[in-house]
Length: 195
Image 1 (cartoon, rainbow, N blue to C red):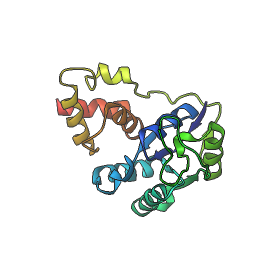
Image 2: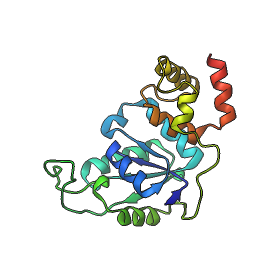
Image 3: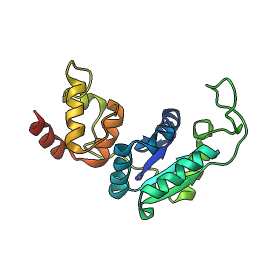
Image 4: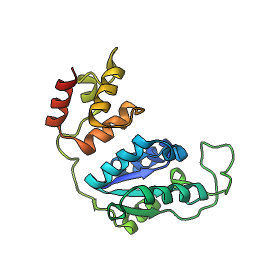
């Protein structure tokens, strides 16, 4: 699997699932138009951009272009690369009918199309790279009491507040943010401070 250094920004969780089957990368969702009013998520995207760089990969329809334009306005352009999928008519398998414009989104693209789009955007790729050392896993979140426990949601909220992360994040979203922004030592220090 190809490793991508930059954080890839997509519209929704189905796009995120598709990307995770094609590349080894940190993928963050805008939650569609929800990004427009989510100040915390906007701040997170700016932090991720400064730390690792962003690749914006939205659908080729009008909504995707509006989201792409918005992201271009809130994140310093020197940290952003844009990947574009082609216009392909059709509907995704999970949907009963095509989108309003009748085009496939990121989730409906073939792996080779996604890889071609990322390469054309200038993604930093390594086809032989091993996963970075010290990456947190879902099991590590569980062991740290951040998922699966009686008080885990409250612990996650305290950690998110201490790190300046969005309040409404799932444990999977938190895992992505932690792997992008903090090392194990910093995480341990913050967890000790909030206890």
